[in-house]
Image 1 (cartoon, rainbow, N blue to C red):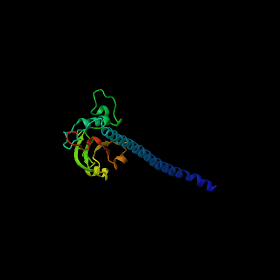
Image 2 (image 1 turned 180 degrees about the vertical axis):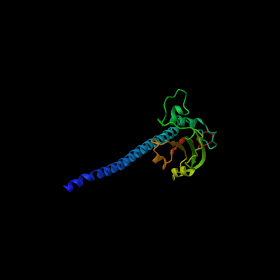
Image 3 (image 1 turned 60 degrees about the vertical axis):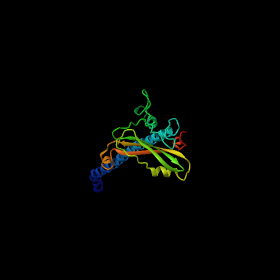
Image 4 (image 1 turned 135 degrees about the vertical axis):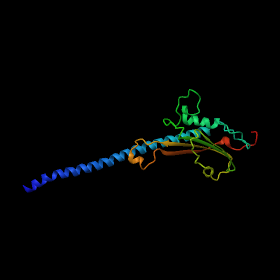
Length: 212
């Protein structure tokens, strides 16, 4: 009888302990779910931004737009070249003909002119060495500086001795956190600075004899 009485007297304490344990576990699970959602959203945005640079660089290297730097004495930089690349990237939000509906390769991301930018630089390469740089061209002039350096481009060329050109498309994006959860914003910057780039061969930029 005493053992039975003692058992019932201890029940409130056990229930309280179980409640606290459940609260802690649920709190941890909540943080994990929020973290997965936040990271998944950032990863999705990052993949879209990478695709944006790739699509723009691929179009720029296709030969549909002439960068006007084929000769050893280059012409004045033609802004139609980077503007056409920007149209592919931003669609109706960029340098596209009036009436363009497509949001471009960045859809559904829309860049903020105050914080984001598209930076385009192209190079002329002779005998495997960079001999001229054109740009960088900035879409928004939001204070961003090109991060892909001449040394980076030279390393991408490797030991090649061919005459060619290289196109670099960079996107800078300020990614705002999805949940704005205080625990995350206190340790992780909000917005998060995201930078993506693509380096692509640009045959039209290769040096050729003057007048050709």
